Each structure stands twice: as structure tokens, then as C-alpha cells.
Image (cartoon, rainbow, N blue to C red):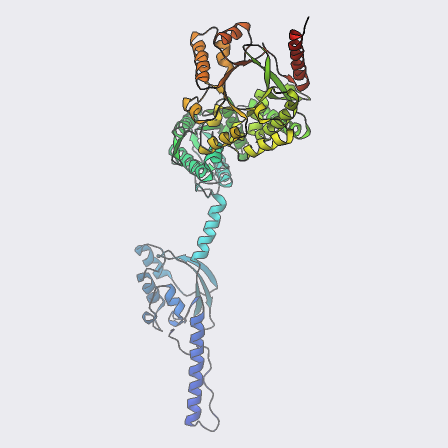
Length: 609
């Protein structure tokens, strides 16, 4: 309950005409008492603290909320106390202004009555924030109201932090990094901005470096282990990159799986390259995700800026670093690449080709060609592999080595793969029992719904499942999971065959052959092409053929281009072969013509003379 007295501005009671009786005086006193009680009740219901000082800085009025806000017992406050005595009580209670004892003594001596309306915010020693409003009164004193705005200021600070920081890693976001880069460029030019707390760089041939860091297999982790593992990976990458930086460097998360680094006061390009190499090395150490050790690695794009460049816009530097990152991922993942101007033309062509590929996929501008597969013992066509082809209206036939990676980076590979599968199955219905081999990309294997998609295409086209062979590369098994095994097992249960493509070129493990339902192994063309000149390679091919036979798997050699290679495969008892010696990829009608000629030849061979 507040301790209060009649208002300083209240007029004295009027005289009662004809004198006062005891009853009249008692009635007036009761009325006054009720008014004071009502006023005290109203004051104690106010959510804000309130106090009144007179012209001599003496406390004349306060409410209970004021005492609570400053951790005081209302009994400690007495009407008539001086202002400095009141603030001493508050400081002793730990709710004075957030300053040292020496600073407080100086501040205490300087405080005085407010002779004008003021609004201030004060941080207290206990961490609370109070908004204080002072307003002078007619008598020379003032009324002060106190509002605890701590939670409001914390919420506002949190909102400001969220607007400039990534929630998952706590790092600055793209907007924040762009501001930091803008300030860094100003400092590099020798400028100092009022809002920037760091000074301009001293004279010298300084460089600034921007690095973009991108995990090489983040999507694989996200798709196979789930978003929780993907988030853990991003946090791990952020921690490792941060350990490679100097105290003044800036690290930010600027995209779903992209990080940016700003290096200031760089003396040479080699210094930036050394930082990039440390980041690549640190990120290549396996991560433990969902109980598994995962090797992910990162690629890094780097661009440099000097004082002489006089760059004022951060955007081009980010674009240049991004182009360098693309170059690193295209040439060899797990490396760092510096920007050079020729990358601009490559970027322009890539964007143009990406738009054209989307249009071709949507408007029927792609084709499926079929490369014959031949039984080695009879040299007869037993099937064909479906291969996507892109006859570009301007650039001619675009090689798959160019547009397949383009489709992967543009997020079109699953759409392209589904189109090839449906188109090829439709074509193969009239092949009278010949097998059809179709590649599934790692992305297709990992994406949910592939089994249902294959089931629907077989149903819609009428192709018997036994005529379809799905080829997957070892890259699909890079981070093998129970889901991958389940997917391949369900596909095999449909009645289709499963072939392991490019066997021996990358991540080969004999345990794959034991765990997964493969029916065929494909010997990579790199082995077939060199086995005639290299006895070790010859032995490897022979070992693969022997292994396949022991596991009841058929073995097919691809890239057969000479009769010598064909004879070697014959002596090894390899089952099938494909390559330019036996037939080049051709449109569906041409492949049907080859099959028809073979059947006519077979019929003529058995026809009576």
C-alpha cells in the first residue's frame, strides 16, 4: 500500500455556514478519507511506477509498483526523503543504474530536478531496462513514471537478431554479410563510415577476399538421413570453417547449404588460398551423423579485391565467388578455385543452356537413342541401352557429358530420368522380348516414390517387368542407407533386373554385391579400353567376369571398339558387350530395323535351300 498525503494542489476545505457540528466535521473527514483511499487504490493499480517530488527534491508521493520495480520495501520509502537518498536505496538494492561505484558517485552528484519533459531508458544493475518519463509540475517539482520494458526490448533485440542472423547456426545471414562486405570495401578504399565501428585500413597494398563454401554432398545427406542430419551437418561445417579463420574474419550462412567468408587485410592471394585449403582439409574429416561416419567435404570459390579496384558494390564479388565455386564443383569437388574473367562467358552460356534444356524437356525437344547390347557367344542383339540425346536447334547435338551435369545442377535430373524411362519403355513394347536397360541417377534412387513411378510406367506402357533392366552407378551407394536397400529390393520384387554400372571405378565394395539384389555387373569402358595394353587391367576384367559368374550375375562389358577387345572378352566368357564395334546409339526406328535385319538373317539361315 502506498504512503501518501493530500494533493499539493488541493484547496483547503470550505467553512461550513453557521458553524460546524460534530456530525458535519466527522462527515467531511470520512469523505476526505474515502477520497484518499480511492486515490491510493487507484495509484496501486497502475501498472507503471509513479513518484512525485517537490521543488526541493523531496519525495511527496509514490505507489507500490514503484517500490516493486526497484526491489524496495515500501517501508523504506518515507515522504520527505531527498532524491539522492532514494536513489541510494535503489543502488544498494542492486537496482540502480548499471555503472561502477565510482561512476555512480559522480552520477549521483549530478542528478537534479527535470525542468522539462524528458524520456530516457536506463539499464539497471540487475539487467532490467526501465523507460522513465519526467514531467515538471506547476509548483517547481516533477512527476516521474517508470515502465519496465525489459521483455519488450529483449523481444525487439531478438527480432533484430533474427533479421540479420541464421537461426540454425547463429551466423550472420546474407543481408548481414552484405552489409559487412560493404563496410569492408569502404575500409579498403580508405573510407570510414559513422555507422562502422572499425577504422579504415592503414596504407598498403591490401586485398579483401570473399570465399563461398559449399558442402559437396549435402543433398545426399538430407535425402538419405533426413533434415535433422542435414542440419547437424551444416552446424558441423560452420564450426570447422570458423576454426580456420582469424578473429577479425567474417563467416555467414548465405543460402540453404552455402557459407560465405570475408577475409580482410589480406596481404597476398596465397594467403587467401591457404585459408581455402585449410577449410577444405578441415571439412574433409568424416562427420558422425545419425550413428554413421559420413565423408562430405566442401568446394570453395574465391575472389579477390584490391584498393585499386575501387569496388563499391558487394554484389559483383559474391557473384564472382559463386562462379568460382561452380568451376570448382565442375572440375573436381573438394577443391578451391579462384575467379577469373573467362568464367563470366561460361556462366552466361550455362544459364542459357539451362533455360534451353528446360524448354526442350517441356516441349519435346529431347530424344531417346538406343545402343545395341550383344551376346558375346553369338554376337546377336539381345537388348539395348536407352540414352538421352539433345539436338539443340543452334548448337547441334549437345553431348550427354554436358547436359546431364547441367540437368543435375538445375534440379532437372529426376524429371529427365522419368521422361527417358517412360519414352524408352513405350518404344520397347514392340521389341518382342529384347531387354531394355535404363539408367537411374543417384537422385532418382534416393527420392521417395521411385518404386511407384516405375510401377506406373510399366502399367501404362504394358512393358513386361522382366524386359526392363535398371542400371545404377556406385555413386548411388556412396552413403548407403537402409532406405536405399529397401528401394532396390522393392524394385527387384517388381520383376525388373538391377545392374551395377561402372563397376570398379569409384566406391566398389564386394559387400555391395552381397547386400544388394544385383543381377548384372557392367565393366566400365576405361577397363575395356586399356586391357589389351595393360596386363593388370586385363586381370581385373577377368576377375570381375569370374566374380559375376560365381555370384550368378551376368557380366556386360561396355566401350568395346575393336575386334581384339571382343576376342579377349570371348576368351574370358564374358556374357554381353556393347560399344561402337557392335553398334552406335541410334533412334528407335533405326534400332528396330537392325533387329528386323537380324531376324531375317536368322530366318534365312534355317530356311530350306
